[in-house]
Image 1 (cartoon, one colour):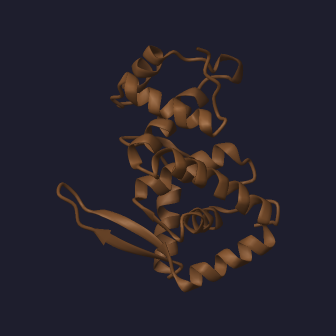
Image 2: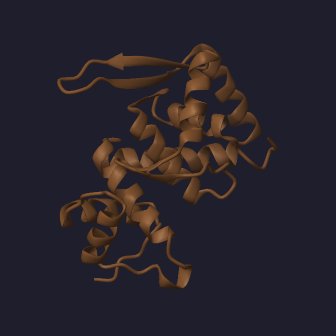
Length: 188
């Protein structure tokens, strides 16, 4: 991929590096890549479809599996009460790849880092707020740019058509994060 673009593998590695080399949860990785890709046009944007936790990309899931199988990223199971989760951590080889990204594409790396830092400051990269933000923006993106206006009640109704059950508080969390990322402007 060219110097002015960042492929999906580089994006995942930059996201992990932006949070001390690790991220808890596949869902968090999915949402951070999604939010980064809508903010930074130079990122390779995998296709997304509605999923329980918001926009989901099978291509991104495959890319993450490849990074693990090629030993650029470690996948560590985290036992849970209801289900197990995963932590993704850069390996030494992955850290070497990030050094190349930082050298070849410093502006793009810094833009990705800014997205991750903003999300970390807002919600400590917790899955629920990242998912709400992803869901809200995914719904807005379905509308032509000039019609990207939605009330909270409209968001709740539209979410239900995608199989998402969200409350007014959930919409508020998602919108607040999107505001911090300068993706939406709320008229109060």
